[in-house]
Figure (cartoon, rainbow, N blue to C red):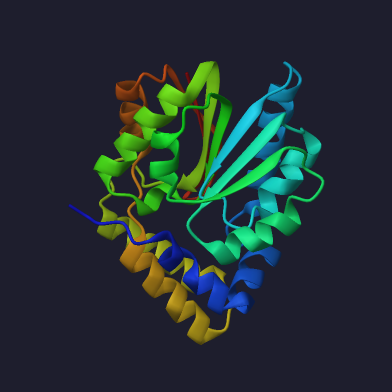
Length: 235
């Protein structure tokens, strides 16, 4: 069974190499602008129905989600991450978001342990680090914590149907090396090594089956930008 790395390891690359992180986001190499425009629209749609409570799993520094929250303020926001340094930055980005709480905890453990109910559970570029069994546990836990009609919104990388992990990695590493042209070569090498070691994405069909087995009734592909997807699973 593939073991997922500690979340501090997952974020260590970006803590040590801010030049890489800035290049990825400022040059929109992972389609953050398009992806979080979709997330904003989904949260606005939910906010129009009334107050909602949101859980953010693997929130990191919440830099991109915070602007979405400003456009569709939740009644409460709970962010979970294993990186203390990321949570320190999240406190800055989340200023102005009322009733925001941050939790220094493993995201899977956090959602399994909580007794709270949520209208929206969000996760961004975190689930693909989990092994299949842990992904299934996450779906079950989210399904149990969502209110009826609640939404699990997942932003993540996804494999093509029938594509092996090795084939996915070949494609994604080629994408990085040919498109991330303004990343310093040594940082790009670190990024490629990180992806090769820690990325274990599923296909949409795999994720749909996991969601169905957990009791989530509907899967939607809200947006797709090459390997980067916005998915919504509804309770």
